[in-house]
Length: 633
Image (cartoon, rainbow, N blue to C red; front, side):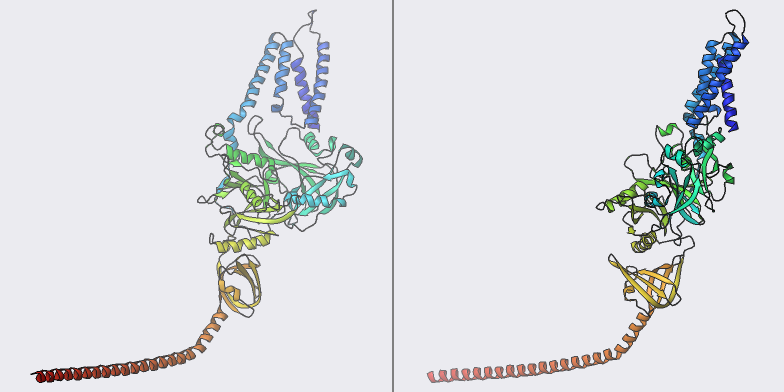
C-alpha cells in the first residue's frame, strides 16, 4: 500500500501547485509565502484525502490517463487565480489537458486497427475430432449451482453465508466446478470475519454430489473494507490495469487463490491487451504478480473471460477498421452472447488445457447460420478461428437452442451451454437440456450442418453412441473420429450378444472371444439381427479408443457356411425331383401325343366314311334319276 499513498501524495501536491497562485502578490504588495504555504498544505491534505477516498471506493487505477479530467479543471482554476507568466503557464497546462481530453475521447475512432491486430487469430478449417474415450465437460453451470444449493446444509452457520460464483477448472486431473461460500451481507461479515470454505462438483458426471471443502478464507469478494479481495488487490497495485472479475483457483493441495487479469490499454484509456495476473492467497493475503508466460501450472484461466470476450469483439468487428462497423459492415462477424461466462464458454481439450469457446454469426437480423467459431487458450490468450467447411452452412448456438426448445416444447425443457464439437467427423452441437427448475434432464446432440441428424439421451456417452449409429446410417458422413482412427478388419467367435431396438432398426452389440466389443446397426447390416452366441463373424470397423467399436460391414461366416451345407444336402433331392418332374412331363407329353394321334385317326376315318356315304348317296341319286328318265321315255 506504500505505492498507493505515494501516488496519492504526488497527485495532491500537483493539485496544490496548480491551484495556489505562487507568484501573485497580496493587496499590500507582498508575496506572503506563509499564507500561500498554509493554503498549499490545506489543498494538499484535502486532495490527498479525496484521492484516497475515490481510490478506496471506486477501486480505479491511478495512471496519469485516469486523472486528466481533474488536471483540466484544476489547471483552469489555477489559471484564473494566477497572474502574469504563472497564469499563462497554467493556461497552457489547461489547454494541453483539453487536447489530451480530445485524444482520450476520440481514441475508439482511430485505434480499431490496433485492436484487431492485438486480437488477430490463427485460422483453421475444422476443429480436431473429439476423443471418444474422454468425457466432455457437459454439466451446465446452472444445474451445478442448483446441486450445490441443495447441499448447502454442509456449511456451518448456514444463515451467515450464500453461494458465490462458479468457476470450472481442472484439479488433480478431474474437471470440476468450484464455488466459494460468500457472506450474505455486511453484518454477517462483521460477525463471521472469515468464510468457511468452498464447494467442489464434477463437471463431467451429472450424478455426482457436491463436496464441501473446509478452508477458511479471509479475502473474498463479499467481504468489506480491506478484506474485500478486489480492494485489497487494488490498494497494493494502484497502477495496474485490471480487466474482468476475480476468479477462484484451487491448487493441487486444495489451497484457495483469487486471481485477476491485468494488462495495458491499446491506446489512451481504450481497449485492453492482457499481460499477466495478480494472484492472492485467500487465507493469508500473500500476493504475487506473474507475467502470462510465468503463470503457475495449476492456474487454468489466467485470461479472464471478459478479456477474451473483448478480443473476440475486436476480431469480429474491426477487420476493416472502425468506420466499417457503421457503413458497409464488410466481413463483420458478431460473437455470440450464448456463453456462460461473459459470453464465452470454457471447454477442455484432450490434454486438459482450458479454452474459451465462442461462435460468430452474421450482423444481419434473422440469420442464424454460423460464420465460424473461435477457441482461445485460457492460459496464454492465443486464439484460433475455425471457418468450418465452406461448402456447408452451419447452425449457430442460438439456432441449436431453438432446435432443443422445439424438440421438448411440451415438457417446457430448454437447452443450456451449447458447445461445438467434432464428433466422428461431423461438426455438432452438444446441448445439456434442463427443466423449468434448472435440473438436468437430457443431453441433445445435433449436427450443425443438418439439424435432422440429432439424438437425445440421459448421458453424453450414451448420446454419443446413438449419434454414431445415426451418422453411420445417414450416409452423410464417413463417421471419422479421432485423428488416429482408420478402417480395420476383424474376425472372431461371438460369445455374447445384446440387441436393442432404436426406431426402425436394431443395434446389435457383441463380444468376441478376445474380449473386444463391437456394435452394428441392422440398417448397415440387415442380417445382423440373426447374430447369436457361437457365430463366427468377419467385419469392417472403425478403430477408435472407445470400449465399443463401430462396425460398418458385418458377415456372419458361420451362417453363410450353414446355408452352403444345407444347399449341398438339398441338391441331390432337387435333382431327383427334377428328373421325376421331367419323366412325368415326358409321359404326359407322350400320352397327349397318342391321344392326339388317335383323335386324328378317328377324325380321318369319320371323314372318309362321310365321304363314302356321300359318294354312295350321289351314285344312288344319279341312278334313280336315270331310271326315272328312262321310264318316262
